[in-house]
Length: 197
Image 1 (cartoon, one colour):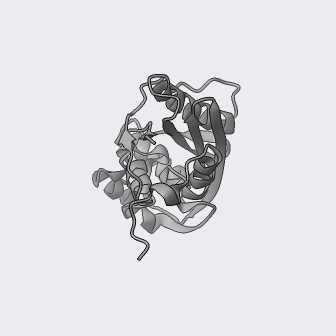
Image 2 (cartoon, rainbow, N blue to C red):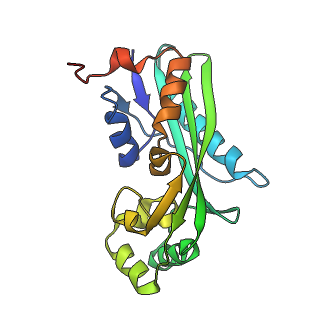
């Protein structure tokens, strides 16, 4: 059974590979415009479903396609990927010394079966000074990440605690993914390449 990840994200590739599954990566080219008055939850769910649907349209009905989309929320304001250094530093200043929400829309499609949901986590940051934010930006890590940071890299030094899914904050909530895969008839224990010895 073919498993396809409809994402260009190297973090999602790493997370899915950690399950020991063989899969193909086929990024979806879709319009990711936010449609007001759409809620942030509805937005990430729609993006995840549209990414999966765009790829599934050209595959056999038995193929399993995974789509995901992540956004960061501060006071109900969506923080996307930073436009430039100034935007990246400004984002970190918004996140400094407080909590924010990370929403990841997740969708699994197999033929006529589809699963879509939003997984929400809360992340607390310590205080971050402007100079430190600038030094973090200079590493290159935050440039392509929602909210302007990566929890799995150097950005982890800002995180005091999280409530929710760590892998969801990275962009692919694995517990929810396994449940969705199971619902469409894909048992990871059947397809994992990991040794059980």
